[in-house]
Length: 394
Image (cartoon, rainbow, N blue to C red; front, side, top):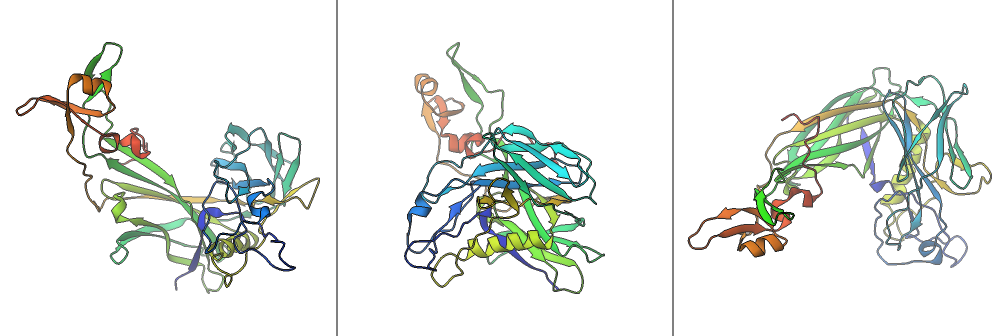
């Protein structure tokens, strides 16, 4: 039997807003976007004042990792749908995880709204809550939560779906004790890519020379985190077995699979309450396209302001054991990158221009420096790094 799963698109945090056009009427497009993530578009643009000028509410994203690895919390603020600025994260807060026996564990402010708890041995049999004191003195706390046990990942498998021209990646797991039942997955994908042309020359501005390049900007690696959150439940099955739940779909046309691809899948057991929270988000974010879709609901989570219980706070704090597994895919799917022929440049054109320099060509018909655009010869222009990841297997 195959477990049914669902995807929470972009982890949108959403507040139900009155339009002011009659009691009980709600705007199908009324959304607050949180944590810097994507939002589905609506059929007809409708921006009541509450949407275009919403209040600024705290968003808490993260969980307590009791598996001896780093725990991470991100603080940010909601913003209106039409606001084009970058999402506002909040630094300067004090965050602690408190066990029910009174022990407290302090997160470190890493800057940019990111808070981390270094690898710490935590008792999985205790309950925990999150405490937040913001820079302005306001305090928040979560409910006490139990630690969700998580079984190991059995396998990560993959196969090509020719109809979609994509590589489908699946996760498999099981809990022989039949206790987990509720699951969440996310991932990080890393792929190697190369440019159409190799740059062997660079500029020495101090000595006004064109010299040999010592770094290789032809090969890069890029890592991307999942934006969709995968959920699944075996509650309706007699056994707690997960088979072939898709965690990622890699379009072959992206060429991510041509030179080398790796995916790290993380798996978390959930409590029923946490699963219901993410399920409500799924219903809200996937069904806001028309008047006939389910209307947005208020999904705020288990974190409250101490001074004002009515203050909206978005996010859900949970504690869980993290299980993870990495695989590599070496299928050479896609196509080698191509670009137009490079230009032949004089010294002045090569030195003073902005082209990426390839090598010096001796004619005929013409001698000169070959140059091309960054998008054809500098892999860093595509968002990656020339530093090979430590886990890369070749």
